[in-house]
Amino acid sequence: MARSSSGCVAGLTAAALAAVGLLAYQAQANVPQSLRGGPGATATPAASTAKAFRDELHPTALPGGSGTGERVVYSLDDDRVWLVGADGRVRHTFGVRPGSVDPAPGTYAVTSRSKAVVGTDGVPVEHVVRFTGVGEVAIGFSAALDGSTPVPDPAVRTGGIRESRADGEAMWMFATIGQKVVVIR
Image (tube, helix red, strand yellow):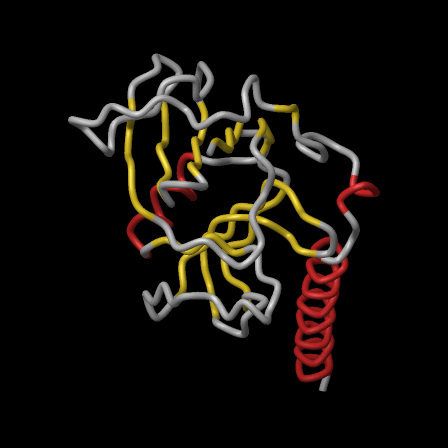
């Protein structure tokens, strides 16, 4: 009898921990940005709000004026991401599909990550890397488990910047808590 009751206790404990984790995630995602505090809570204004320099012969090349050192660079105008090593060399670049809410240009830091959750659009996602919020909307990169990158419904405020599953894995491995994220035009 002791074995079956200890199994029940273990099962109930696991269920309670999962529920607390889900509630903590939901609470964090709904806290207004101005109240969050911590690294990356507010953006450092970009040096210039003008569009960063692009190499017309190499449209996927890292734009000039996108910062220095190890960082994630996200271009709002190009819907593209670059993962840049400490030596300034691009480790990986890929196209993304932004949500309906964009972050302001500036420098942020990764504030939270989730291996797998359900996105604000109801789609199961993985490799979620959050770096800021706009109002009540958390902004971050994620990959849909079904691999989709649909055009967001403009009537629904979403901050998920969707990437392919392979690109999501690359982002997950690169962008740990505190990693610099530079958002450019």
